[in-house]
Amino acid sequence: MLTMYSTTWCGYCHRLRSQLDREGIGYQVIDIENDPAAADFVMNVNGGNQTVPTVKFPDGSTLTNPSIVQVKLHLAGIRV
Image: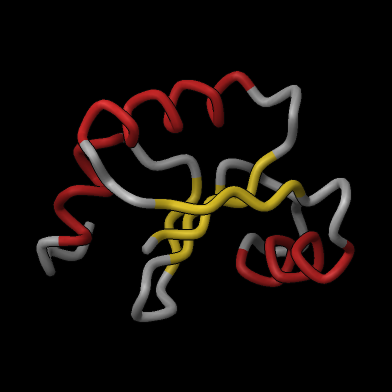
């Protein structure tokens, strides 16, 4: 299952959630504004920036603001 780090006001996050739902890809959402540890994680993988959506894959790798195509390729084992 994917973890998507998000905020309530992020339009890119809403779009990606809709696309994940449409594709039947399982995920959990963590709001970085309500979870300081999650905010720290996002900043750590994004050069100090709280950039969302940040997606963490089951293998621990991450993509920042990925397209649904990038997510699907990554899940298939094709690094993007």
